[in-house]
Length: 330
Image (tube, rainbow, N blue to C red; front, side, top):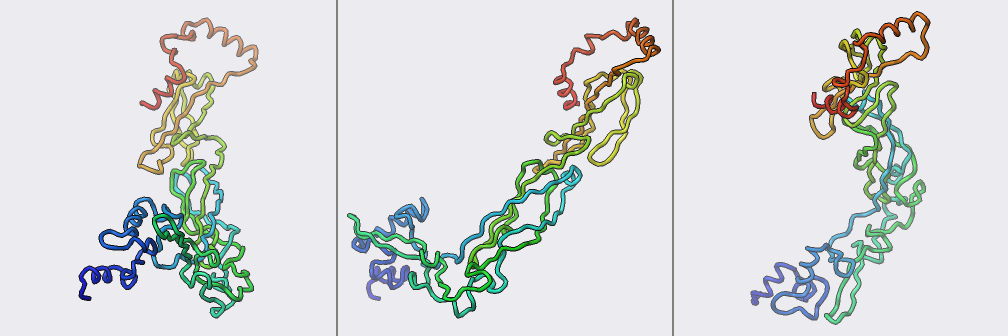
């Protein structure tokens, strides 16, 4: 081309650039300098393609076919050992799966798939409106084929044209260590199958904790209430307690007070986001007998006279929260 400006436009936009329709609209304002399509095109780049006219600019290609499947939610219950180490679970779920007869396209056979008459296979329809600025063009998804660009003349007998059927699927899930009650994990593409070749939704896994018969949980820490007899805390003893990894023996020092918090460092749950690990906190409870024999009553009465069995306020004025704080800082 002899005109350098026209040659540049042809190289950039092809034949459409020569007719003033490279952007598909505002043809009456096409001339020297910046075109109206470029101005509004830049706005579309900033604010999103649907900012003007609701439909945005056409990319020139067909939108992805089919309709995405919905997400699927399942609950998975874990015991403390599984939460500690992580778990591999295999579950069976009822959901929409790809039709094996048609391979997910929804057609009886390949010859039953034809180009959409409404959009001509582009998956998009254009609407031109006259405004005070000139003609404004909007692009929307084709309502006939839902953006697929094709129409089915004879539907698959198994899925009735949906490309999916309701069935059962077996799914393997790897659950990381340290999850907590109420956490949600997402497994990509394991939800309901999409319609007519659309992508599958995700599987949302809701974590539930199985109740432990002896232990409880608070964040990363494991809690245990240890009931001891009066002689045990006075004389000291060794007892066996449950932990999330099995049984463990701990020593109770002579003169241990009721309400004291003992700590097994690092014996809690791991953090899912870091290398941090919780502790096992052991709350000391002293069991008081409700009935005494006459001989036991006499012994207690004798002990009562001893000054050594009278409370020492200077040593026992710590509140429960002070003891908790002391356990965390030790």
